[in-house]
Length: 50
Image 1 (cartoon, rainbow, N blue to C red):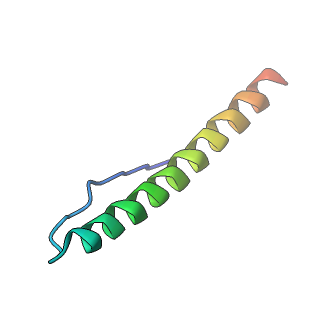
Image 2: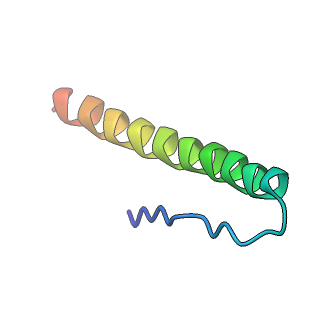
């Protein structure tokens, strides 16, 4: 599994637009991390049954 989390580019013209970029980045990062944790826990569960 290739998990990549990149820093957001805060190059918008207003603070509000940059805040929206950060908000989307946080949501995307949380989704990626939750997916990764789910996969690790599933794999750990599969290994415990063997």
